[in-house]
View 1 (cartoon, rainbow, N blue to C red):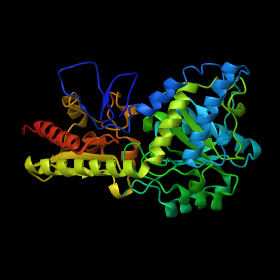
View 2: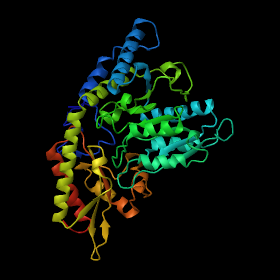
View 3: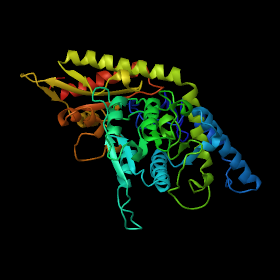
View 4: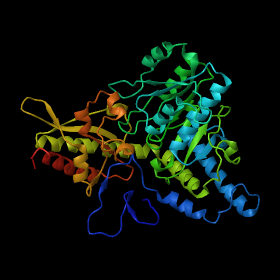
Length: 437
């Protein structure tokens, strides 16, 4: 059970203010998750530790103790070398900025011959926009950054990085692979759910580019769904986003491997070992630590439950589509995907056998009070202009199919009965777009 600001929840989903309508079925867990009870209770328990963690009096020391206990829990959960490897941030976006800008700057300053930054074509905007920024002129010094950025593709059939393909691309770089400063590859994609072979990629990148190159992964979507163990992954940086694993919003962390160079990108006092200035939010950090501990400790059980509900959701959707003469096409191979994620396009064939795709956005509006889902990345959901998201482009999805695409993601509180009911609602409303009730 979970709790958000004291409001009662049911099956891990928020209960709104009293209403005679049944709760909508929530199938958008890749966008955000509700705060779990244990995290809320832990946050409430540290209300008395309201001192500044940098102060040396009893109130400050109590806050410092709570802060360091949270750091230790997070370190243990991801198997970091030491608690000092964890730097607290305001969320996953800031963690990505710190790793990519701070890491690249540190390497490039030490060795100007390392000036290339590589990312995949399927990164979340929290990485993609940072990589774009690196090539902009310095607004203060009015000079070019001297950095060059590259987007390497993923396998069109799986949505995952193909290490053999990347080996060839790295070897073909002008100046060779030793010109690379930093590589960023997301652990799991938020839209199509593809999970990348991070450990194998780290080994490849370090082999070709040298030990000095830094490797960052955004683990916002993977924590709580697949194993996240930095001692096994061997990454230099790993971004953590609390609200994706039933923790509070507005807080995150960056794992920094011991001995890795990193420049701060914010300026102020010497908090977080001088890497991230600003008084730490002890209450939010405490909630994140407890939520992460639960997500990692109960991983196998929760992943199996999410996969079971995801698979049942797809099974019933397929059954219901047959009844109304419709079909679906999967935009990713679920064998290589997160256990909770489904990315499909619904369509009906015309007389010539050509697919006529639904409007996913119309469907979302029509079922909004019954089923909560997404037409793509939540970060783009308010855009008026229709364009294919970069993850869908990368796996060969064209505009009509993209318009008909739904992203459905289950959570650890999602029940089999809920997904069955949701599947029937989705297909019924989809069929209405073709005049079939």
